[in-house]
Image: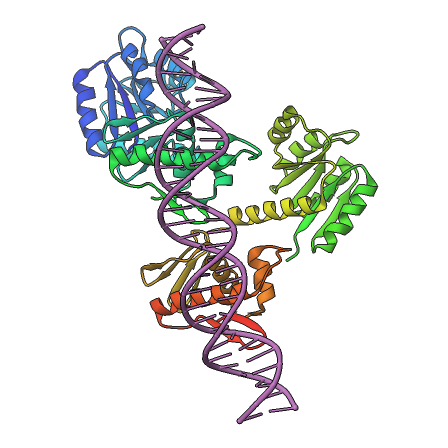
Length: 224
Length: 224
DNA sequence: TTTATTCTTGACCAAATTTTGACTTTCTCC
DNA sequence: GGAGAAAGTCAAAATTTGGTCAAGAATAAA
């Protein structure tokens, strides 16, 4: 899974340069040349943000505070300033690290990696599950097959989410019902059959392959 | 290994009755007639807890939340209440199932068994039994002979699972039937013969060797 | 409200599995 | 060796299960 990095700097040349460099190293990058643009691009749910402090209008410190109200991820400041006071300000604002310009690309990569790794350790299940060209974004509940978004209803996505988060494991219908519908699976588990059918049809039409396998007498399994 | 069950109810008559009943069915039972007593008895590390909701002092729901901070095991509520709200409350509190009083002992046993079984299945690490080139993946329920996957039906796999998990031990047909079909399952043990035959045929065709040995007059044994 | 979408149900069919019963073979003990 | 019990074989019947479809509820959207 490619990590998403958001770069915010008012120097288009710099963002351009960094973007390609980071992309070369496997990251998915979005760039913003102003605070407003940055806020607009928060919906890409970056895993890490590189933030310039010196910017016209709302500066990096302010922006950092605002961002913190929206999402949780490492924020690294890019800055020419190096005073102690700056560091304090930055960390108070919610930043995680400082990188002073000019910086080496090696160092930048190393720091990014370190922060992502730590972030990963600390936390939550992956928000994106991928399998065979299919991308399932659990946090915004979207499914993609090569740029093309596939639309699933709530229940359908719930089932996909449950199964794909536990790949290769077999779950019987009762178990799926319980996991998706919430509690006390008194309901008819025949519903599952129908939803599975719909899901399969949509996935098959788009991708041409089966993702859900039937294990006779046992249930269904998400093939990974 | 006998499963340990903790019963919590403020009616001594009920706990007494349930205790002996469950003990008759092979469980190790501790009983508590108050929440405090229940907490004290958590150190017996029960595999499952039966919890009355209506109790003086800390009630079952409260107790449930507290217990959840200590140990992980299925918690089944025994209750006279049956409203939807109660269910929601109970499940929010961390309960796994509801059994409304008055309940049949058969139902109780069945539910206990189901929960223990599921708990067992979920909590065990991917377990793999191998013998002579054969790989039996219990969690994926798959069997391989040199890269080649052999397909078995549910019952067939259940039998393989039971026998191969207890290699070199002889089990008579009754015993196998009980293990695979369920506790009070009643039926002709002639079925076993047929399933064993099918299993043997599949294993033999793929691997060319016998894994299940007949011990005349005694039963079958998985050769390891 | 009307309208559209999603969710659920029940019926039906087809496929796979499970079980049964009749029959044969094998083993044990006299 | 032969009787009787136990195990093996086979095919057919019975049952379960999963896939499909259409239509009725329920829910959300307009």
